[in-house]
Image 1 (cartoon, rainbow, N blue to C red):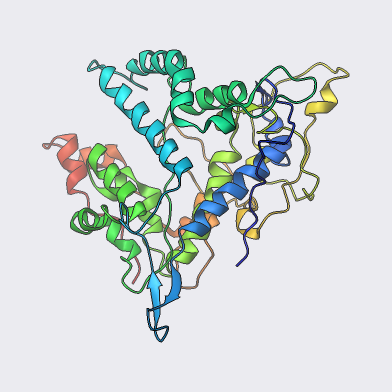
Image 2 (cartoon, rainbow, N blue to C red; image 1 turned 90 degrees about the horizontal axis):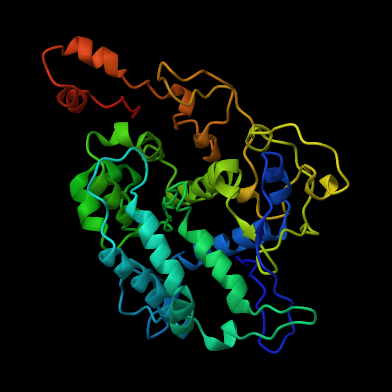
Length: 389
C-alpha cells in the first residue's frame, strides 16, 4: 500500500522562516485547524510511522520460502540512520536532565512542581542541545528573502512547545502505538495478564506502554484503564484495533481544544489552509468546544470557523455522532450526548458496543457492601465486568 509522505525541505532551497505563534484561541478555531496544512502534515507523519511498523514479507536466502519479518524493541537488525541516532541522543539527554532535577516528593494534586525547574533548565540549554543533536545542515538552512530567521529559531519554538506548559504543569505522553498482526502475536486480551505483559513489554511497543501503566497505577486493570480494558475485548484482530486507535487519536487528541490550543504555527507547521481539504459534516468533537462572544472585526474572517477535514485516508476521518455513550457514572457528572471513543473501532456482531459495557460498581456501593473493609481492599475485591464469550 502506497503511503503519502511528507515533503523534504532541501538545504539549497530558499525558505522564509517565521516566529511560530499560537492560533487556536477559542473552541471554534479547532475546526479551522482540522483543515490546515499543519493537521495534514501531522496525520501524514503518523501514518508514515504506522506503516513503517507493519511486519513485511520477504524471501529467504534461497528465495524459496516467504518469511514474515518483524522488529522487536532493541533488535540488533534495526539500523538507525544518522538523523535518527542524533534525535535519539537528544531524547536521552533530555531524560538525563531529569536526574539533575528529581521529582518533588511532596503531595501534589496535578503535575509535579519540579517540572518547572526541569523546563527552565532545558530552555537554557536548548541552543546547545540543538547544535549537538541536530544536523547542522538542517539548522543552518538558508534564510529566505525577507526573513531574518533560520530553521534553528523556528525549531526552538516547536521544541519548547512540545515539552509542555510550565505554568499549567501540562506534560504527558499517552500515545500508544499498535503493531500489525503476526502469527505469534500476543492476544489483545493479554493486556489484563501481568505475566503476559511482563513477557511481551521488552519486545512489543504496545505491551511496553501497557507495562508502564502497571508500573504507575495500582488496582484492577478494568478500573484504572477502562478504555484499554474495552479494547482488549475486540476479537477482530490487531489491524482493526490499529485503525480504531488512529481514529481515537484524531477524535480525542487533535479535535480537543484543551490539547491543540497549545500548538504553535510557523512556516514549517503551517496554519495555512490545506488546498486538498474537502467539506465534511460537523461532528460532536468539533462542535462541542468552549467558546465566548467575540467582537466583530476585519481580522475575524482569518480565524472564522470552517467545517471540514483534509482529504486523507478514511481511517482518520472524524467519528460520527452518537448519543448512546455515557462518559462516566460518577454522581457529579451530568449525562450528555457525546461520541463514544469506542465508536472508532469497527462494529462487529460479536463485539461489545460501549453502551453494552457493564457499569462499574460505584465506590459508595462498595463501601456499603464491605463496610468493615478499607476502600482500597473493597475495590480490589470487586469482580471485573463480565465479558461475553
